Picture 1 (cartoon, rainbow, N blue to C red):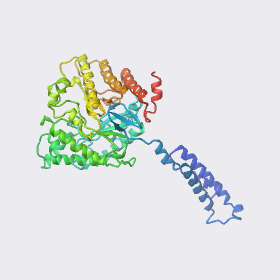
Picture 2: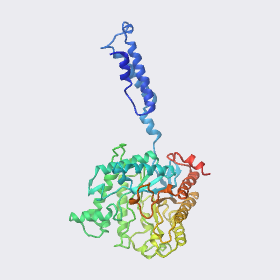
Picture 3: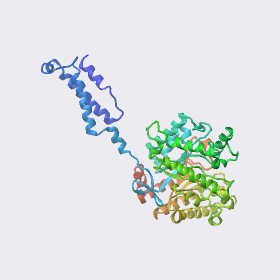
Picture 4: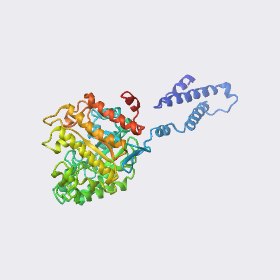
Length: 477
């Protein structure tokens, strides 16, 4: 074979990176040069092995070795440049890279579900890119689907690997877009299985103590079902990046359960025991991530605020208590939801706005003075089904909430962030509810959300992942 053909063979090695291409081209050329050195003129003076390939092979290998040692391993350096730190807690504040971290984020519950099928998977990247473009930092989403269509957990202890790989994809895609994830572990409601499915499993297997949905919290068999699920999830090794979930800082925090209620025990003891047991179980497996309950924020039957802050008396009889549940040592931050138009049925819009201000002030005060923990408003939304609804009301509603967080951030207070419920991309009407929005379809709403990202970043500086925030916010000053 001639030299020209050998050169062609040498440059057929095509690394992924542009820099890698350049370096390997250098080595290929160097190998070709060494082939010329193996011509008869040079061979007269040197010992040659085999058919003359000794020098080109040694030359190519030496070049590669030299470059590897000089650059210290290209892959390793690339990983180091994109290394993420875990979000931590210091008293009433979240901390990231040594700085206070106040959150402007959103909910998109559907990320795992839409990552299962190839034709819906692009929506996941689209919404994560859109969130990053708005300067948002955290997305809350479901890390569960129990016994439903595209179920992650088919039955107790049996998992659909295709769906688990979809969740792997969500984590990797979020990392690439600079978004962190708040993963909820089970639903109090029936959507996507929830505690109802766990109770049905136990009942079908003949081990259930009760057909009541609330037996999820006290039935030993069901508690073991849930613990097995949690352990499987937290120790899952991502098939795309090789990182166990419990070791991946892309995950901002775990949420035990979405909107827990145990109405069969209004004293709150049953739910309190469950939170204590499950929070200790999670922390025994994963000490790196933050943990929250997933509460709506209602004050329980022994708390005097049930009379002055709760929307109505029914809210104190749901078996939950914001203070008592959030005080548990293994719970790192408190969670609160904001849905005045669902909690009241006879108030005008302006009255609901007043309630929101009072509701947020009360919980932030609790975080500052009683809990000494961050308080995060993990869902807020305004229904478009209200009889007097106008799109402009959403902007006013959002602004009250975002302003409260900003005031807290200015004071280094416990009001640590808010997540709007919920964001979609176009063409997802059948997945939407009465609260969802496509933010770029209403410029005033889009502007409001972006401005919150910018003013929080001005207080404490943008995160390393908010790549476009400097340009984005300079345009709005």
